[in-house]
Amino acid sequence: MKVKVIPVLEDNYMYLVIEERTREAVAVDVAVPKRLLEIVGREGVSLTTVLTTHHHWDHARGNAELVRLLPGLVVLGADERICALTRRLAHGEELRFGAIHVRCLLTPGHTLGHMSYFLWEEECPDPPAVFSGDALSMAGCGSRLEGTAQQMYQSLVETLGTLPPETKVFCGHEHTLGNLEFAQKVEPYNDHVKAKLSWAKQRDEDDVPTVPATLGEELLYNPFLRVAEEPVREFTGKVAPADVLDVLCRERASFERAAEPLQPQARALLALQWGLLSTPRQK
Image (cartoon, rainbow, N blue to C red; front, side, top):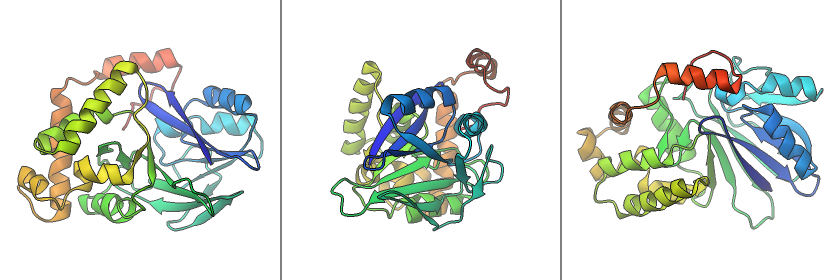
């Protein structure tokens, strides 16, 4: 199983997963179809399926164009709002692409219909992978837009957090540096946070992706996976895991606002420059 990491838009990631024996390929979260098809052609593979984590335009807007260009292409996801959806998936459903197994994991919180995808190959020494969209990101998680804090806790800690620790995490956005800066605020004495932040700063200077990380690494510095740890509880003033997570989400939102994020007018201008829809960007 070969994974191509494809940076697009302002900070999004698309992925192309290649079954190296059959040369069949599966795409994850297609936002810019032209860029994806360039890589499909360069790799000499046959794109048969799109896995979409959630319906937001920066993860699904390329589906319709791909279906038009590649008749018979299958578009899968868990939310009927996903553009050009072919079939709706259920939690726990398993798919097969050659030697690649896919387990569909419903992970509500960012959106109610958010699906993450856990991939592995039988009798292969390579570690498994999870494509977590905006449910779990490097050192953070997506904003809680539709689900409850309890749902997000179950998605992050009970569903994704219990995958094998060697699992490679491929998320939907390059937010690692900002996430780690917030993690340092939550746990200022966590040496794993300090080391990862130093590493991420160097990656940012070199303009190279920070994905993937392993789940085992994430458990050491991602505060949203560490809601049972005493320093994280002390920061939030809460004990119940869902309450800890709820406070973390609110504190993170305040932290991001203080960092002077891109204003809506600037986002709209970028969208026009990219030739994208006028729908406000959601993350």
